[in-house]
Length: 341
Image 1 (tube, rainbow, N blue to C red):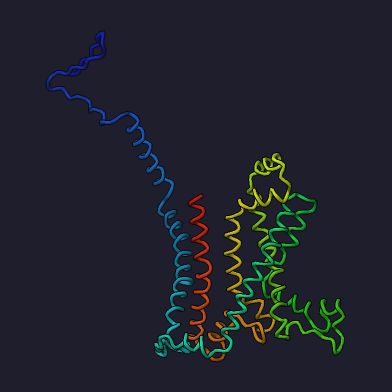
Image 2 (image 1 turned 45 degrees about the vertical axis):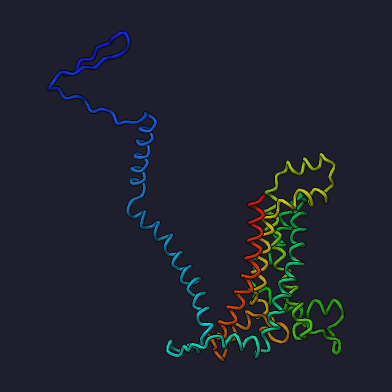
């Protein structure tokens, strides 16, 4: 039996022998008990919300893309690295033979197309950095001023990006046609004896293809820079204007430094675009007579008539190392500067 007495200083609880006292509350402050109760209810609520079928669907949605990514990207990449040290004609796994560094020795010393292909990839990268990057930034800055018909201009400049490289190649083939092409018709070079073969001339065809590549890549970079400009705080521009800075000074000292993350993305995208260039060149002239690229050499050796999969894999490994040698140091330096700032 429990008796409760109210005294002047508080409440006194007494119990008689043999009586059963109520269970005492768990130790700890009330806040801790309340938090434990809430977490228990949350866990129970999650159990009620996520049924066995929901958990199976969730694992299926996450697991299938992960398995496909590992199988189609990482496994194939590692397989290419391994095959680079072998010879294989692609018929049966029994024909794979280990040759060590012989593929690389032949590639660096005996292949007359390798070093021109490396040079063309470097030229491709330099042109994409020097032309579409500043041009895309310029177009983005102009469209960010909210001029009239800005949506129409954005759609017009971005239209080449939504088209495939194959379609772009066919369009520019019509433009470069020696007889009925637009360029030769404008400059009067479509008459017998005055033809300019933009695609067949080894001194011109690489630059002709680069014009088409820049035409497409400019619209892509314009959208990236336009998205970066939308994230600039308008208060920074207003403060710069109050300090008496003109439009160019505001862009150089205020806007451009805030575009550092966008510049990092743009540079990485441009490097990848330059190193994986294939479709446009293959549609133009299949990468021959002045337009050799490393990606073209990989394709010709792996799925060509010779079917030298090991040799083509060695070229792919060289292309991978070139891309990593360019991208990784820049990303490390950029992230290091961001941490310091």
